[in-house]
Image (cartoon, rainbow, N blue to C red; front, side, top):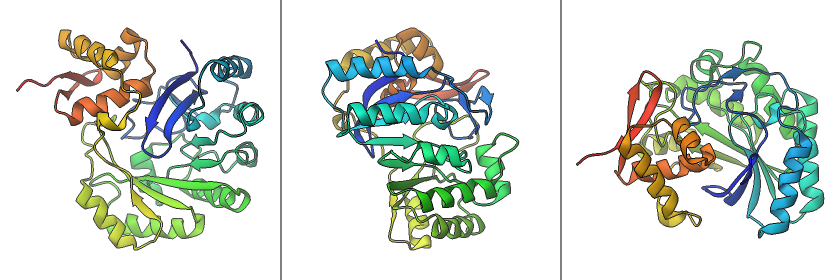
Length: 312
């Protein structure tokens, strides 16, 4: 079993994706109210080799020697991958070892103001940054950034990256009811999009509860209104109820283990990770399906969001 690789897991945007996790949970530059990975435990912009290059490269070499190629290799996981100062070296290793496999980087984009970070991502085929707010007050409210980050530097970093990067940029925007779906915020976001010029703008919302109790998902109808309001050709809705038929790697034994565990007592995502030994992103895929099918439900308790069997 790998420590720094997970999957391949199904991705709405990238097919069967092998995940590469370069930071411990939950080291991030943001503490977003909607994050399904959980609250940020180390809020920082400090870049260092949180996980050593050799350890990641050794796992990748073993995987490549023993498994078929995934559709994508994706830097994502438990925190912000660009905080790892070795991300460029790992990306280069993948490109040298498996040049035919496209590489994607899922990042919040906050460190793209740093020229070194932008240079390190230049070999990626697709970079998928996020931008949920283009005003300082909404940025602070939704994303709760590390103290030194401002929305101005954030957006300028995305613009600079666009000007230097020849690959695809797919910009993800989480729409949250009552937070960033008002006219002022939508107008500010549109102005930012026109400067960043991403190939795609992808609207998303919550599948399950985030880190704050009063955060609610936007409906598909709400998202469609946003698309119509912006009236841009490159906006698409990627939020959709997950279905097991779309998950090629869906394991019945994993589902049974999750259901059996929470049947004994309600569990958080972290509880399930520790008990079952699966990566948090894999646990989340199963929870998405089980919630959508009405087999389990979420409840708020002192330690956060718990999952329990939904009784008829």
